[in-house]
Length: 341
Image (cartoon, rainbow, N blue to C red; front, side, top):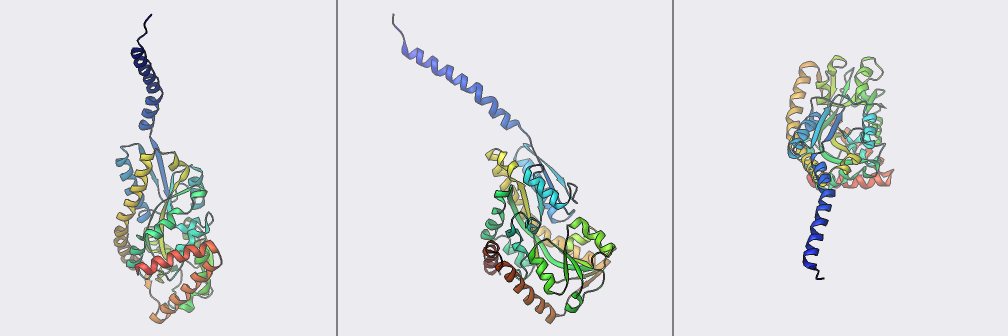
């Protein structure tokens, strides 16, 4: 009996193809149809970090065709900063936006941007934040601790808000001032003769109102949007250190995304950062004007401000030398500052 092997082969190939389709097509369709929720938290509201979240979510929802749905929770609605960071690490929430110094307990190198004296002025911060080497450094931290670095962008120069005016360097002596939980800031405040008190943003206003602290190292846009003038009227613009903001995503969540969505998330995070930089400069200038209408702005005498800059720059370098990994990060930051000055 003659067997047509060509027909048999084609038949077998067709059957195999149908079987493969039955396994792969539904799975592919499910991946395409799945919606990924992206909850983003921040401690602040109605300022650059909140603005970054809004722009980022709008971009991602559009570019993903609705496959990623963003939810934004400002003003610590998802809990205090440490709780939000834990949520990101374990995948309970998908992102947190804030100053990287709050992650120093996760990786000590995150505090490197607190190094005072390296950023000269606001225009310099705008340039340095775009430096590829600095971005590579900062976004690369935390990968082994459940963190995916997504974006780095500007915030503003630091100030000291206080219950009593600080008009001279001598006025810092004996003050209890809130700082970030990072050695760079704590040692800077000690060098000025004050006692540093680390606490999260949500605790600062009541602490000032109750007299538990004399003041805080803070940011202009934060104290205006949160009406800090109800607790303290005096702001001394020391301009150091400059504050940066970062967006941190849950690595567990990010790694579970399809490759095309990962690309969209990273690209849109960078785009939102670029857009929010000039927005923040304008917003800062408006906030400063608002504070002048409700409180008092103070500048140290020029010679005392120069003395402050010299002193705090030395503090940053000294703190970095204590820890090899932090010193390496400091060298990258210092080199970026020099390139962009």
